[in-house]
Amino acid sequence: MPTPYTPIGPVTAERIPATIRRVKVPFVDLATQYAAIRGEVLPAMEEVLESAAFVLGPHVAAFEQHFAAYIGARYCVGVESGTAALKLALAGLGIGPGDEVVLPANTYIASALAISAVGATPLPVDVDDAYGLDPNAFEAAITPRTKAVMPVHLYGQAVPMRPILDVAERYGLRVVEDACQAHGAKIDGRRAGAIGDAGCFSFYPGKNLGAYGDGGAIVTNDERLYERLLLERDFGQKKKYEHLIKGDNCRLDAIQAAVLDVKLRYLDEWNERRRDHAALYDALLAIAGFETPKNRNAEGHVYHLYVTQVRDRDRVRDELASRGIATGIHYPVPIHLQPAYADLGILPGRFPVTETAARRILSLPMYPELEANQIRHVVDTLREVAEPALRLRASVA
Ligand SMILES: *Cc1c(COP(=O)(O)O)cnc(C)c1O
Image (tube, rainbow, N blue to C red; front, side, top):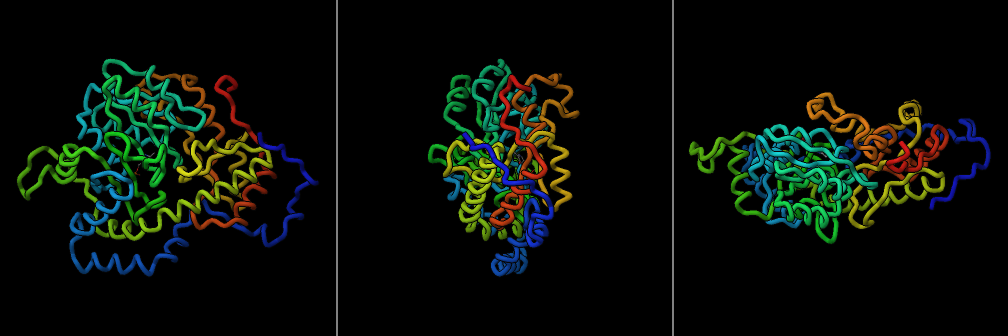
């Protein structure tokens, strides 16, 4: 139980030292990261430019090999984005029109869009108190048309996969992990993405492992799927002009692969720093009586996002912004309440945990280069402008 925060007196702007009052805290800070690795990134990019192999080629192959080894999967296929990774994985596993895929209602829209893009229907279900796919809700949603499940390792925390794999096995469903926010996350000693039939990653710049543009990858241990994915991403060809299937063009480019290969070497260190920051947030927020995110396994969480909950969230967010603190909401509108998914016909109130969270969640600044004084400043300011909202049970909407 967090100790309630006891104020030592009114916290007014005048009481805050000028040096701290000026602290600006961005949500992420990619420029500072670039400054630190510039000396390695630029030569790596130049090597690609000089090689003139811009799409796929040896730099992409090298990164794929390194990333597969890092995640602990046999194969990796680099693609143009996380969304493309999800689409290809689903299509490669034979998911298509008439099929249903279960996914959590609290996720980024791309998880659902990928399912729709292959012609299947997303079946959103409620999440548990750690924002992950609830295995009971998953099982309850299964119909004869359900062919796959897409657990999302949201915010950098791997979903416990054992119960999900058990249900999937019993019903003969495919498992496509959306690990787009979970580069390096672990559960039960394995890395997110290497556990299901396929694991999908995004290398969008702000992700824990981010390119300088779009990028993505699929990892798998399934050789047949791997061969299929190689065709899918490159016009259905293995040999030039020999098109075995009606494939797509969604390849990873070599400059991004070269950047990613440099950054991959820092990923563990960066994730470690994120965990340190989360521990400091946890301690300070608990003292102040604020919600701290439920951490299922301290070692395995890579804190892509640090998400608390507050009352009157939108006002709090504006006040933080006016004091120079950038925050995010991941995500303000659950999948089933998005206009694009009105056709699912799911009414508000159906997924109380997700819907309550959507009104209260607030993502605080989180990136490796964040400093302790910035974290203290964020929590001090939050104490000034917000009331704690301890996590609500589903019944207390
Ligand atoms: C970022 C993200 C995606 C999509 O990745 P892109 O590379 O932007 O296409 C999919 N799912 C989740 C959970 C994400 O965070």
